[in-house]
Length: 448
Image (cartoon, rainbow, N blue to C red; front, side, top):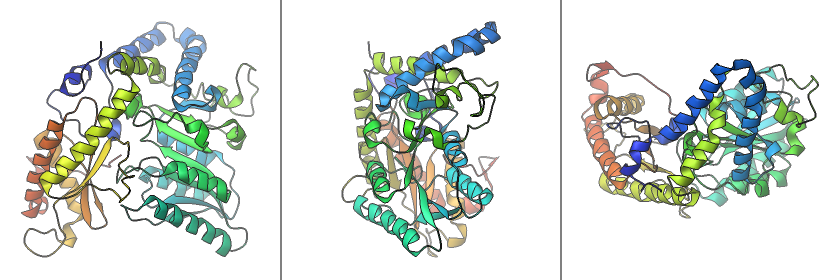
């Protein structure tokens, strides 16, 4: 029998009863039923380590891969599981063979760790460069596509020598600000322009249906399973677990794995599997029990939650309605474009905070702008037992709120009250008056 969504769902999860989990999008969580499966696999591994690692693990991993492949609508041997989206993205960027004059295109809201990886790859590959598409949310999808195409064509027409765009990287849903990108159209545009596409879907599987991936056919695709809806982040699978999708046509383009282990491409492998799948089975002595929890996560979603359609309908409506309610209570706005595509079918809401930059009383001075985010985040954690993901974007502060099946509208109303109080404190200058909150030091931490 399924459990009603909202606070009735909280007892199924490990989060503290006093904690308000309003930022599921960063690290996710998972239910007790999945934790039980995780511990059972860990116990099996310790009972007979050699037997489990050498013989038992691979068939169980294949079962998880098959379930994920079904969710994505792609062949099972086009997907492998890796330790988080950052690992999968690194594997693609480090695994491709780059030539002098190649260019990697990203958008200016690219996730920080991914941008650093691109910078590193450019540093170690002579003549490889990165170019950024400048956009200003809330931009319309057509304008975004036009900006992307203009940059790619500009590089390839105005470039010196053999300069060409080899790879474009973009999100399904951006991290910060948390808005949806027209990723399907961007994949199609990449094909038209002769550019490889790498889709960063860290916010993806479990948040909205992706069973059309086989029809969209990106060149590379990575999505966290531990962030959304019980399958990893959104899918309720334990941290850290992600799916790396590489279609058969591109598997030979990648030169290895991260990390490199005994099954490197140059070594002979059994004929039972293709090389791409086989080399990902064993990447050193690591606990990968979370990879085996996909069946338990999907079973929870089906039996306790009532299935994928019910989950996505609830969380997407809650994000939309909850975001609007918070904006109404703060007398601000939700970040969206005229077409409404930035908030379409996602579990996140970006709400502007009632703060202004200036020299008048109640305004944030330019010299103090960088302290606001850290103050709000740390104060929310220490005083209100929650976490509020705040970003300063183009002169305004925005908060990213995550909807989930264990939350209700009441949680968003509560969040609005907390945000209003914290913004009032900022207006009084409290964010610069002290280096501590309730006696604890204010530290900088990175939003995911």
